[in-house]
Length: 98
Length: 392
Image (tube, rainbow over all chains, first blue to last red; front, top):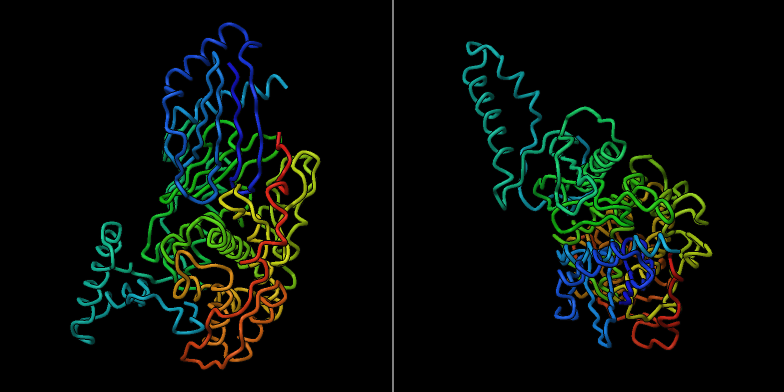
């Protein structure tokens, strides 16, 4: 599974990208990440949601797995806690693997 | 109490203005010498207490305002690196400092922002009606942001690579709380030019909160927003500069500050809600130029002009040209023809022309019929490619 997280906005208006190939992760880490993706039913999520609140970080998350791909955009004001937890975990792992 | 500069700055609902210590003194007076005075003073004090208690539940009632910081009602919470808001209450109004620097910085900055709006614009908190100021620190892990979520402030600790903790910048906290003021006033739609104006207003009053706290003149102020937020090693002095947009940072990891200072450099992009953090550089610079043009302390003239426009003229889909006309008009109302000329000249220098017309103290004469180079014809746009490089 490949996961791409693109962040933009926030108070500084900065943009950053984090990409993660779960194949390179240890078995236990890969399993927990897979569970997070399954937990939010990622491939069934509507593609766009936005709070329109100021200074929010905007996220574009794209996941490719088994020949299928899905992309979702949202921001910190949307109240999508499971998605935010997924973003935080992917970002953290991507930083570790740099 | 400080006197207001102009009656147009007065709150729209009546306020009680006798300080409580005077009522307290009156309550001790002899009934023989001053029949009924002591009883009425005690009733007033009781009424004041009831009013302050009820204000949290009543829309349309302006709270009792008696001193320059009377209405402050701050609570700082700790999210303990989780997602839940507001989190655990760790410091309430009037409580002593804690061992947590983020908590204390947030508490102090909320107070400084409240004081600015109350003492300069006679505005009682974010909504003008004494809204309690809540803030949560330690939100999530290594969270690189701070924001106003429509109800409260939220601060991350930063990742230590790009940002440090977000509570350390007074102007940035003033910036965020001003988003709340805008929400209750013009309600500027957070997209394209109206969104850039929303950002602009927050940068203006964030900077003025800091200047007021330091009692600096326009010529002495640094005009930076977010100074000190960058982590060690980042090549930059702040997130934005009103004095010199486009010069706040230049770092291999972040790229260069992309803010334009003139409409000819307007950036047309789909990112960042239409470049709201980029194109705000244009009205930001106009405000700086107007402040320098007026001279002295920026909150006394330019700050009041912009506040009048924000609270009485601008609407949710206002664009730069509308904002320029509104501020020229507000300057004419507050400071006459000379004031209008200062503001009109400032906008002209950033490529936005408002047609000249006569001003009176009581009338509105400006119409948004000027020109904003680049606002309609985006031929000068540099496009989305003028974005930052990867931040990590």
